[in-house]
Image (cartoon, rainbow, N blue to C red):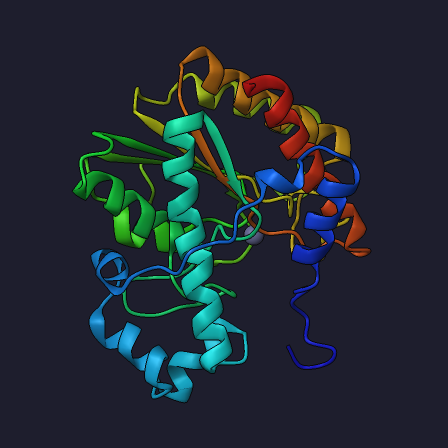
Amino acid sequence: MPEGHRFPMHKYRLLREALLHSQIISPTQLHPAPQAQEVDLLRAHDKRYVQGLKLGILSEKEVRPIGLPIGPELFQRSLVSCGGFMAATESALEEGYSVLLAGGTHHAHRDRGEGFCVFNDFAVASLKLLALKRCRRVLILDLDVHQGNGNSSILGEREDVFICSLHGEKNYPFRKVPSHLDVALAEGTSDEEYLHVLEKTLRLLPATDILLYQAGVDVLKTDKLGTFHMSQAGVRARDEMVFAWARTHGLPVAQAIGGGYSDPIEESIKAYVGTIEAAKRILS
Ligand SMILES: [Zn+2]
């Protein structure tokens, strides 16, 4: 990344180090992400878009909304990030829980990327699980402060996927794409309000075979790109509620970390670590 770029790319390294240092995960539990294969990408994306990225021939108009420097490095990174989430879903089906220490690229559409998202990992993974009949129905719970417009534009009309999004009404994307269940919350939403709404919303979710959880921590008050006023304790309570709900329903959980842009970034890392610690405690 160029010096001074607004995307905090180093957060991924900091998160991995924090998880190992706190012994929430051991080195043997970490696995390198495999590359996504083109056959998998093409269930969710247009061939023209995938080829355009690969060959570096997308137009300036297509590149600008992504917000990241386009090139072979970004293409490679996007392949492994997407492949990592597919691997996480397989691992979740076998072991009950798995988390990709990246991902949650829910703003990527079928034919274009935006908002730091190149390929849509949740869409690619969902369509693979369904195509290979590993699952009959998939639930996507998206608690990132930004609405997953890409998830909805790719999967929003499918009957074998159910997308539920809780997000900031005043946050990007300013034109939301309808999910199966959207809950828009006001600027300044507090822990108490949020947890009350989440509890009610979880009761509305259908029975499925797996939960794909986008656990963005940009709901924190310290986040530069979010409009909510949630505390660390609030985010912790959110994740405990989600994992307890999944446990009650016997659902395997595959998680991606989603957005986190706090200033300082250590606040995001702390919340990400808390999420994974809660999963370990509740789902093991
Ligand atoms: Zn976000």
